[in-house]
Length: 258
Image (cartoon, rainbow, N blue to C red; front, side):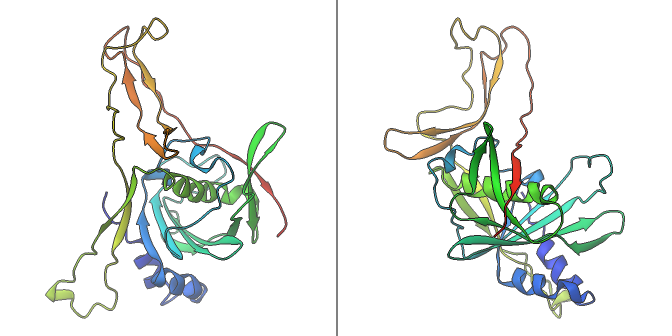
């Protein structure tokens, strides 16, 4: 995974766009993370790493999450293929600023700000799990993806086999030594295989699983109390035909007043 350098683009945009100044200044101080496409680190729709009402906690006081969005926009929506979420932890909540790249205009624009309470951020209504989001303006559903990405990121960090890896920013060449903006160091979330597990279950199986099927990735709680992420595996490989299936993260949202 290569650094995206979206924050660097935002800081450059602020030179000519006054509305970017606050966001750009915050981006300069943030620890940068590069996420997979659509921002989802683990395909864990239940957010099992956050069960039991664990208090939300960022790995650093201020972080920037950068990711691309390759999926086609919904009808009536404009494509925004680049996203940035800048999150800052306070005593009671996590406050976020966002920016999106508008493909049609070929420019960055500041987007909706939002916050998540550090406790009580998930609740159930009519049997449906929902997020509690504080939204600065606009429709709460417009910021749902960004809130899901942030929760998924924090959820992944609850797994003991998920580590933060760092890559140093690209050094400036002699030709561009006068460039005022250096390239940032970037962090990634790396998943180690839990001890005692394998990537594929091979041809094994039981009478309950006679055909090849995909065992989706999931969080497993060990006897020690630690949580680990077990990647998706193919069970009974080569038996009874091929199976391919995608899992998408989806949570309903509910707006509450701060």
